[in-house]
Image 1 (cartoon, rainbow, N blue to C red):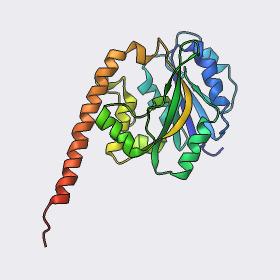
Image 2 (cartoon, rainbow, N blue to C red; image 1 turned 60 degrees about the horizontal axis):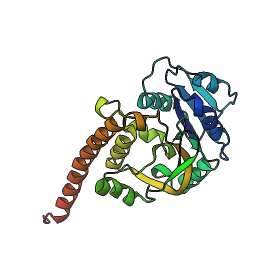
Image 3 (cartoon, one colour; image 1 turned 90 degrees about the horizontal axis):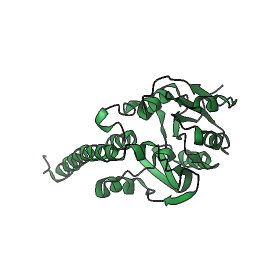
Image 4 (tube, rainbow, N blue to C red; image 1 turned 45 degrees about the vertical axis):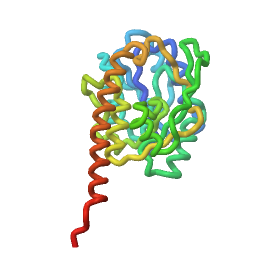
Length: 255
């Protein structure tokens, strides 16, 4: 069997209430050239049994007894992945059926992109719509500007698809304790500094669950502090890089 274009990475931890709908949204994609890695992160509820109940040849289930959280488990899955691109899909979110098809079209048109994301509809724990997430800008320049001028994460993490090879070259997701809760934002800033290009599709790709037990809610204060650490590091390097380029541009010629 040839390697798929996409490897879908889904770490799961005690998400039994939402997992079946989440898995089925991946299996129902109109785009079919993918494998689906579900990585159990030491769940103590029925999440493991739910994942194992799906007998689909695209699914690869990876079991772990310890709970080491998302960055470690995503790294584990991506190392095992066979696809050219990594598609992030969380175990409590729901991808729209044409999500992968839309992203594949963009990547086929411009394979120089490192990462492509999109917009989302926010849902509550019962699946009811409770807001739109339409803030991510489309083009790379505006994506960088959202970080530098507004101190915001310009990508909705579970909408993203990125190049596996480049991800590994960048050193994977950080395991640094101080910023362990914002591995995506740290990855985006490191990728931008290395010259990678980003984009977003201006349509909703997922239903993003505002899970009261999810990391964003449980570790909100910790995440804000970690976000600022990453942002300050990025701005120091980004402004230093700009000063260096400007200095070269105005240096007198030496004949």
